[in-house]
Each structure stands twice: as structure tokens, then as C-alpha cells.
Length: 234
Image (tube, rainbow, N blue to C red; front, side, top):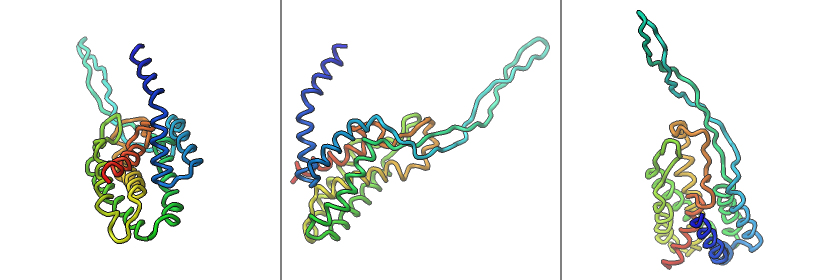
């Protein structure tokens, strides 16, 4: 009990600092309007508890039973294997998946055309970073039965930051923060989740929530940590 009380106090003390950091990232460096930032923050916190079902998959599952056989007064138990169906619900987590996607779409459709000196060049750079992140994240992802698709936490933001730093200044320089956030967020979503949809039946889980680890899920944190790495390295 004491441990959780201390942890709660630390979280309460750090909340203002975390809010200031997020505001600096989204308002000052990504160009998100302050009112949209507040909506983003609230949806990220409250939406982490909300999962929206989008599909249901059925996969064969072996069911092990025993058949009882009595012979000359002796009872034998003979194992049998029957095939049943396992149902897995695929859901999108509002805070950990939908909100980062909406922010990325806002940057793609609104911020880049209005704020970048060469929008076409920026779109190409975003696409290149997205493809690199998707490929490497997909290759490094592993199926953890009963849990989900796991990827080493340091890989997506590190690859995103390195790829962004190598490409953002080619030709007419682009805003590296926007490239990193969009490429890292959507690249992680595609590489870790969308390209692994065919592996979901092997998980053995009744529900698979994309972004379902709350606000600290990989999709959410990759964009933030990538931008932070860019700020530290520039």
C-alpha cells in the first residue's frame, strides 16, 4: 500500500512537467493548435480505457479430452483431440492508437501543406521514413502467445530518429519533428500491427487491442520519443 501511495504522489508531482513537455512537443514543434493539444491530452488519458471492436477472427483450436474405457474391471483414460473454434476480437484503443493516428493525419493534411516550404518534398521524406520504420519494426516483431505482438521498445524511436536526421535536410530542409512523429507513429502501426494481422490467430488471446497498453503503448510513445531524440540531437 505504501508503495502505491508513493508512486501516486510521484505521478501527481510529475504531471505538470509531463504536460509542459507534451505542450512543447505538440504546440511549439509540431504546430498543433493549443485547443487541439488539450483535446489530444484528454483523449489520450481517458481513451486509454476505451477499446473499439473492429473485427472478429475465428481460428481452429485443438481441444484435449479423455475417453473413459472400462475393460475387465480396469478403467482406462484414452486421450482424444478434437478441433474447436477460438474467437479473437480485434479492437482499436482510442488513447493508444486512434489519437496518434488522428494527430498524424492532421499534420499530413493541414500542417505540412501550410507550414512547409516544399510540401511535396516533405511528403516524400515522410514516406521514406515510414517505409524504413515499418520494415525494421516488422522484422523485429515477435508473437508472444497470450499477450500480443512484441517489439523491443528502443527500436522504433531509434530507427525513426536516425532515418529522420539523415533525410530531413536533403534538398529544401523540412521540419524534422513532423517527419519523425508521422513516420514513427504510422510506421510502428503498420510494421507491428497491420503487417502482423495474419499472425493474430496464433496469439491464443480472446481480445487483441491495437494500442491497448494505454498511453504508454508503442504506437503512442514512438512518436513522442522520436521527437524528443530529434530535439536532443539537433
